[in-house]
View 1 (cartoon, rainbow, N blue to C red):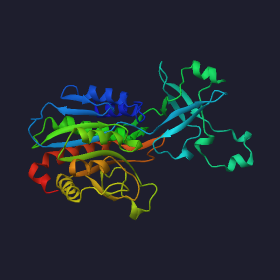
View 2 (view 1 turned 45 degrees about the horizontal axis):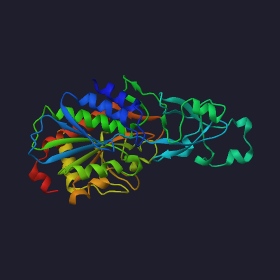
View 3 (view 1 turned 45 degrees about the vertical axis):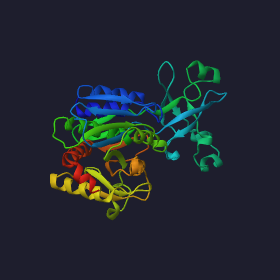
View 4 (view 1 turned 60 degrees about the horizontal axis):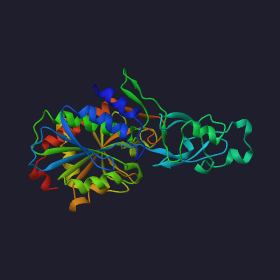
Length: 353
């Protein structure tokens, strides 16, 4: 499977937190020839390359399968659907956006309601957007019709934003780039490593429920004890929103290595080592200090008595919205970074972190 085909399949897959099964099916298909699998009850998927020797310290490569989405909370008498967020959204971006809602017979489409300006009062024009006054319209005219269409309370919903690729410029468009681009990069890295010499075994983990509080990785770290970990993430690009001196995650600038964010200070010695490897191998990296955000590294670093961790970020514009923009070259650069870093690690180096 070509890299771009993998990315397209992953981004189009529907996988709100807790409902990541479609993503895991794609991962299994991609890795079937070179790895074996285990899965736990939280839908965390463990990928073990067949080239592992089994008696060496482990490097954990982590990427999370879930995307921000919604859950149906109630069906109103007029057939529209009350919903709540799964993960963090900017509510102002939601009205008039297309969504797809799970039913037992397949996903159906709907629209997050936006009142026509012709019908709005002055108060409504000035009212803040909130989940209290947003609904999803699936075209039903009554609650019974909505139920006949297969909608049930508790059904997940995700954006209806088909993936697009500008081959000439290498531009990616679509939903769920956090963290399907990280998943793609990690899988490309993992596959490449099966043809490389490493001094440590590798385990890839597609972790669940990161967007609702790093819940999946919490279970993962009870089940395995890696010596070191790399989190592959889709990270908010700031090159269209920050002043030039503050831009730390720009498109076409390669991997974003963060020193810290709101939840974690990445292992400083590991971060320095990773930066040195990237510079030596000619891989583009950009260093970042974040006052917000968070990722699985926050739990990994304190698990099992302490696990050195870094975050390898792929720049994504308009993250956690219905339409993201990123670059294929950054996805590939992140995969190459993972390969070179894993080849450079050994037990003695990791013990110095």
